[in-house]
Image 1 (cartoon, rainbow, N blue to C red):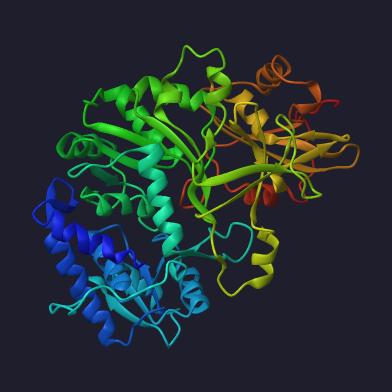
Image 2 (cartoon, helix red, strand yellow; image 1 turned 90 degrees about the horizontal axis):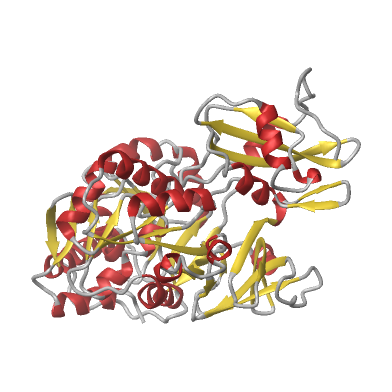
Length: 510
């Protein structure tokens, strides 16, 4: 089925209820949202867009973004949401790779994309998407037809186009209402995070169930505005990368805004370290839930729901908080060895998942698809272990594993320990070639207050095995991150490449 049927049904059932808002003001009711999307569909159809064609979206968060997205789906087209912070050259590559017939842009992003857009792709301003309306209902689509092409962040090379079908997105939405946050008519979803990513996926259950999707006044995050919007729209939830959660928690600690309008802050997309989680819970109250997923299985591998986070009396509470939770009900999760065989609880291997939400494959990349999808399982590239209760703990990406002196070291474990020190604000640990040990650890550390390397080294020795502690320390003002807040370890490795240890660099025998 075409997901656009959800909008058609909600317009009939909740026609006069707010569907889309910007800041404090409602923009469209459901009846008006359907009409706006049908107008967008009419404008796109005049350019020749039809079922199966790709429509790229390159613009900041705005109501017009949602109008264009649902207009494309009304025609049966495939949306290609692109990160609004991409360079025009990067966006142009994606438009060319997916063969987009049209790219919907705002004024700023037209200037970015125009020099790099393929000649075959027409650029259309979002605000000019039609005044008339397309007659009839949504185009018929099969549930296994492509609906959304999500291009990966490309931190290790060219991004890959993850092909998500109408079936994938339907089950992603069902996972949200089943295990993360139920949605009733009038509930709200705030969007301080990009609609091109997880926040965009989480707007779907609100269209389905008569909730209101709220973009911020400036299209991004303003901490003070966020709490004002939660109080205005009520029962407000949002998807947030850990960096956003930390910013909201810091604001809440300083300004003490009312929190009664909040429902659930769903975090994911990057590691949330235990120390950060405890600080966020103290500042933001019982409103946190975690999901673990990838673009290839969007938002839907595991969930750590609010009830588990709030169960502080549980004897294994801290262990559970260091996990990413339990398998979502519509997937199977398995830890597998290099031979492809499942491993027992407690053993470490690659996280694999299969189910209704796993991607159809990578767009026009059969070899990459075959490497990721094997015998029905998605091999995530993440290393982890399942405990006897089914809680999944992630250790690292497989490419981040460091083997030093024959010992496997997972940098995330070292990062967790360093973040327990009150002077440490952020940290990223990587491996570098070592002539004696094969590899050794380098810690990039952002401090809240001055602290000597000797104190950091002593902190590690007090909490983890000697061979796991970093042999080199880099005190930096900030860590390099991509547009979604993920630390770019690839860039840190590039900094280390060819760098010799300066005099006085902290060393130590493994």
